[in-house]
Length: 344
Image 1 (cartoon, rainbow, N blue to C red):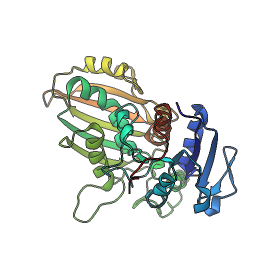
Image 2: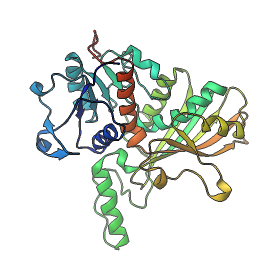
Image 3: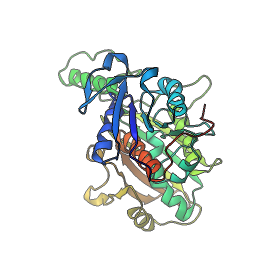
Image 4: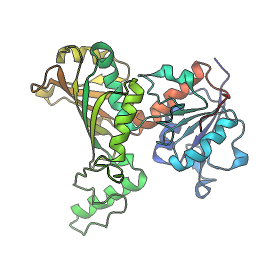
């Protein structure tokens, strides 16, 4: 195992960045130093007892590892710069996920992909991430022929401004005041359900989020021809994404066998006693690192098909926790250090 690494956290003041710092501390990651970076307006502030540095050229030397959660624009510019100076970047944005020379990794699903990194590792989309933690054991045991995924995504997936918008709109409704005009979403999110997560590209009936879920699932599972369809919905929940997954397997897998399989799967907890109102709930899952699954039942309209209800904290396992898990794996496997041919 290599010596304790020096770690940069880029985007340290955002919702996911602060979670990354918390997970590094909570999981006792063996860093000799952790340096938080953010924009100039945040420089000098403290986050979790660490002084925030401005992200500038002369401040990024000497790092072994850089955990990014600052958006695609920042990642596109700065991730290669860190990598060229010898750091391995774990990036939370969508910028690098579909690059052929950048591994897209879920710690419990395809950790072996880290071996091929060229200085940048991509953290998957939170929606696909939590689904695949549950689906990978099923794939290994019974194969997968088709997936239909419907997500019900919390506003924290959009960031702090969306959280504030939901809070302000909810107060207005409850106090019988006029709802403030939406700034983050196309419509008010309070007491509403929006069948749009992210944007629609010209000529495409699927949103960019739905395209991410489908493309990333194929890449991570190594199934380029996987039949998968996604519908992503924004709901008035602060934290945790919920998903309804309809899954057709290649081999027969009963609901009982599926439950037993998932009970032994890493990073998964089964809560499945619907008659007693026991199933995963967004409020209860918030603040936890595992992915929760319940409502496991047969789809009686199709052969070899199951329905699952999957819930995960999108800020933790959906982003920060997986990023720190990847950092741990890179350190444990001596995969830190400069690599030739940095991804571009």
